[in-house]
Length: 227
Length: 410
Image (cartoon, rainbow over all chains, first blue to last red; front, top):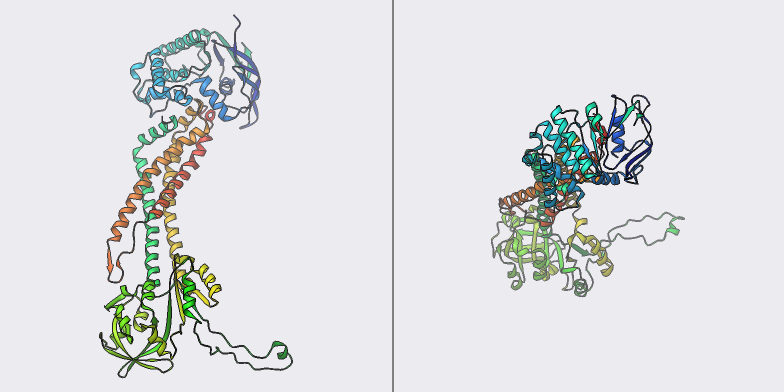
């Protein structure tokens, strides 16, 4: 079966200007496929996080072209980019980044309510399903700040999944977790990629995590070393 | 269905009840003071306008004194020196055909009533003691309609004048000085030397001492006799119009129609009008200053919330919230505080105005001249909402510009 390209970069480059001009990414071109579990690795300062933020559409200051799901992203307005993120991209960060005043359930529901495709009751139903899938449905109504680190990370994964995005992007998703929780997170990602055909792009330091993924792109000094 | 932005705003508000209440209290006090001060200005202005209109007409039509002109022409003056001595010309101040004039004025759509008047400078004599003042010859019904003289009467009845041709109604100050009682006789001398014996039928008291010490009312005919004139002699026509503030405009119109000088009450009472303006400016400055302080309260709290919630804003943006969504969230928060504060301020103002209006000041004024003004209160509500919107929008715009990448990379 032909593999469908979901995300494509063409010669992406980026400069940092502070404190001195410095080329942090140089001519990055690669493709990510539907249902692929892709990891980006590299030493600190290799530019992998910078690349992830460009792929995420949040960073718009770069050269080259970014194409997601056959749509050219480069040069779109900030409002369009926000809508694209809402619909097509889910995020998981190293420091869980949940909204502390809201319950876990609400945290998961917020991107879906923003999307506005389903009614409030349906969204709540979907959020419960995700929590169940991740084995934390008993924590649904607790405030996000009352959960353990592993649980919080699972809630943020549920939030990333709620709109059934085509791509899930992760910045060190296991960086703050013990090996047991890392394992759980990895299994979830693998299941999502395999069962739902969603693409995972994860930046990681964790060699075991990278080794177990479908494909690894290694960056060094802003260039792709091998893929 | 309430939008997700509103839901987030409400959650933020509910998790910081104390700050919300403090900000709302600030707005409440600001709005209450704004409404109270403006209501006070309107109340006192209305009272002092009414006081003025008890003795001053909206528009006075009279014949202006003319200064005599030299009979020679300018061209002759160049060749020879001519000594001229201009004086006020000795022409009668009579308005010609006053009845027709009065009808014409009354037929104007803006005019609600008009009264003819003869004013005479008088000396009031009682034995050897003598007081000077002015007598107003009036048509009783017309004058009462205009100045509500009856309401200032402290003794006697204005209508007694109707069947007492030589009746006179005196200011209480004159009565005190000449120790006069009702039904006493009083000899009056006019500026041209006509002496007339008059019967005191009543006394009036205004809040103006000068008026009370010199003014008297009598029948039109009595004043005409004192000036040695016939029944068609009228010196002034007083006009009342629907909207006193428009007096200067209609004075000019009436002047054109009648051909005589028209003087609006604002021109006749420049000092009073200036005082009114100064009061209005002063209170406007004070009330806006207080509103601004309240607005800063809200600005401060929204600004602080945004600074504390940089991470949350970054997360929302990562999850697909646009800059406009972020603005909506924080403006909604400001507006919730503003609406609570404005409603409370409106109620507090209504309470204060109600309490003030029950304070008894004194005989002449009676109760504190203030009453609830709906239009001012609604303006206050609008201003309150507008100010809180601004106080929320300015920091919210800053939040909308938050770069999520910069936050996540920290």
